Length: 214
Image (tube, rainbow, N blue to C red; front, side, top):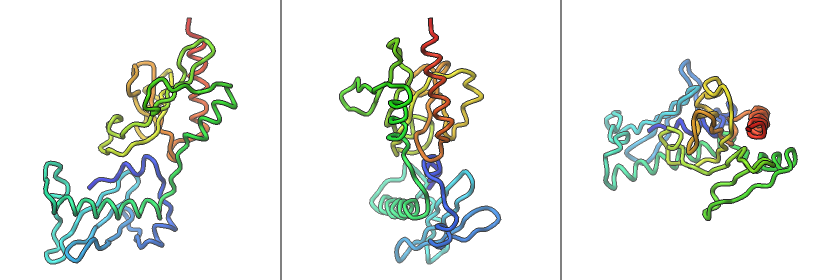
């Protein structure tokens, strides 16, 4: 199973990985951890990827159905759930995770003097407008899948107006805009992996671009 989306929101800490039992090798961090009496997990964390295999204790073979999305049933579903619980434990104990949303909204209010609006009933989207009434930012809570990442986990993002977009998009913290014109807007993760100072700069530029619009 692929848990690389963890690296979109969290940063691993070496001392915590070691404490949990991970071993550093030439290709990354390795760990084998029992799932139940019949299977153990084999985990590899590299710079940009986290992969987990379920290994059958008796044969030493990888249980390939774990990665076959069309494979259904109580057994494979239960094994996936055990792997997911283990990985959530590892994220909680070995990674630093920080949602920047609250700090970011506070900064917008203090620096730009703008209050957010909730135009839709579900309150999963908050709009910030320039004095001219035009949007400068849209904060949303969306699944990673909307950004082309294979995960149903939801994350806070902000859409900002930008220029020279190809140079900004790294598909790590800055993505082509979701739900808005990709020619003029970007989507930025509001997570630990995003440079907060860069986020401020992008927001101020979005404000300038919207205010300068004729």
